[in-house]
Amino acid sequence: MTTHDEFDDFNFTLPSDVEGERRAYRTSVPGLEASVAGKDGTFPVENVSAVGIALHAPGHAFAEGENLRVDLLIMGRSYITELPAKVARLGEGGLVGCEFASPDFWQEARLDKLVLEVQKRMIARRKAESEKRDAQAAGQRREGGAASDASSDAPAGAGGSTGFTVDSAAGTGLDV
Image (cartoon, rainbow, N blue to C red; front, side, top):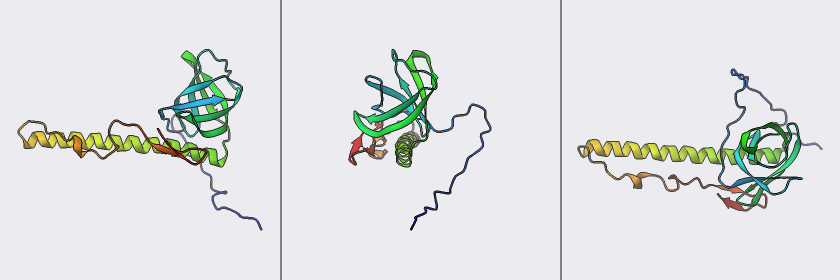
């Protein structure tokens, strides 16, 4: 008996109106590094998306079109291993832009989770900042121009911290 997942047949693409438009949301993740098979050391990741990464590799030899195997590490701990990637562009200062080349289902799911968690934290922080500004403005109107301290109005963990928790490859939580 064969099992068939109804999502196996689900696929769609969205047309882009703008030539050269980014294909996915990019974000920076504190403590995110890449280890590349065949290259010494780890490389700080400038940004990551569901379709690629940009990493800093000054002094290291990469070539456009080069196929890579990349491990993503958060705070030195493995998060995603053996991501197939291809060098798409080489930038100034040793910046290397890579596109992921057919990640498997689990790799793609973990990439999506990583980017989504960062987006959720950014939205919460912006909301808290907006609510704080609104509360301060309301306090100024109410008190005839004297600003009140609305810092206690922000939700816990929504302040300046960029920390979040993701599951590591070993199944434990990583606080970043």
